[in-house]
Length: 421
Image (cartoon, rainbow, N blue to C red; front, side, top):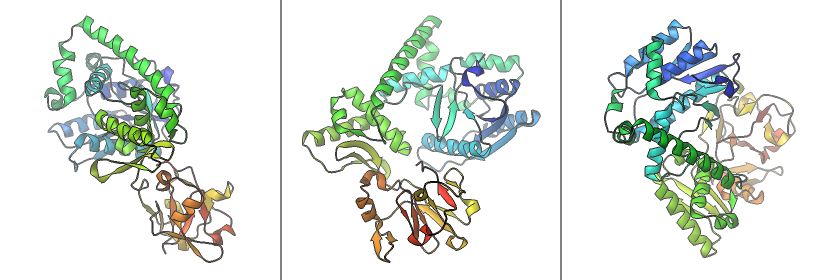
């Protein structure tokens, strides 16, 4: 049913599959297993449905029968916005297992009905994003994410399960109109005849292709996560929306899901007013949950959140340093490394605060904020630069900018990789 060769995957490395226990993901799991790929499975139980445990057992049983590594995450809702919360929990869990197995790809079982419903949902909301629907391949949290079923109808996946005797669960919440996508499915898509549905698919594919081409063209002018105000002013209104949307995706991914069309319109209006008045100061935009975003800095459009971008992390030894951020080696550009000693631990990785200072070669102290000013680091980038602080709260290292002088005389033993927020 699927041309897996198109994805250029090898059978020596793991593929992570997110499996809910429904017909879509169980079909995908069985297809990939029968093709002989190495598989690891993740399942998230949100405990929101009476049938949640049933679905978990279906996935567990399949994995046990076929000797597939299975990982479960029990999630109990603690958020008012369950959809956003569930997505964050799910992808953080996937990322943990993906890195643990050094996977080559994450596969998800979105199918053609999902693609159609997402397309109609986004059109109805006048949403702006990288795609008008669901992309067959994208990068999520540093994971190569592939959706190989996007050309297959759900009914065909149910037939696959029946033909191959694959057990699956039916999510009863899909039968209600509680969610907007369910309303689109029940009131629009399910009522279309075969010809009308095919015409919609052709229209969707054509519009998505044109949108993707235009999106790539507009966002190609983004360098170092910013773009010039002069370029912004040359764009049409829809192009400005595309540009602002991509900047938010790049710089504030944790805010991107809540950036609806009307909010983007408001940001553009504020930027344009500043440009019309030749105001050079930072332009601050108030977001939800007390978040603030700098959307313009001097002559650049940036869209960067003003809160700390780096979640504070503490490590008790060199062995605890995460390998996606640090490497233990002896040779590289000196300014990206530091000599760490046992007495430094526990060590903290975090953003700077206005009260932070560094020790200079002559024994004097200097505010970290002054260092940033002297190095001409824009305000909107300062919170994204990581500091290493020892157990005595002494700053040993600021990525690419500072190493404590006493450590410069020693050979580096740890290097920080390019830091990704």
